[in-house]
Length: 203
Image (tube, rainbow, N blue to C red; front, side):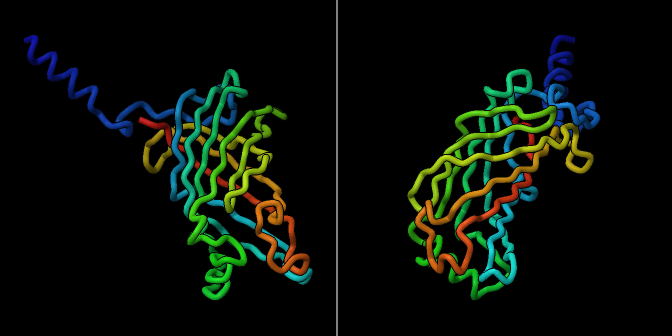
């Protein structure tokens, strides 16, 4: 009997997250589960935009993004975010453009394959918004950057059944401050970054 009970307990403990009771979505940040989360790479992108010769706004993405998030909903200031961006993943949907911006004139991805972000503080600005302060390192240069972040919702993802939290974010940087100064001022110095991320609860 003891052996049967032990086996049943082990089987129950080994059940995947998908078998657990689903958590309805909530847009109340205070109801989010505290703990560590990892960015879902299929749903984590950075979209950038920059003025092109004054004629248009050029858009593209970084698609190789990894991030680790520690959430403390009751004390948001203790939350932490770190991210790594593969610079060779920059994509402007044009092969000639991509080769150029990955080269020495811009990101020099061969010598600086990654950019990183590490938060230094979180300041709530509203019921579902916050400023995430941190340090961005790009091309070997580290500068402070502010992310304006909006919490979307949290709950059990209906597709993969994993507990998920989602955010949108926005930041503005000057590329010249990071040594990316080719073709200034014809191509704009200010670059807008829009961030979308779905984070999965870590095991």
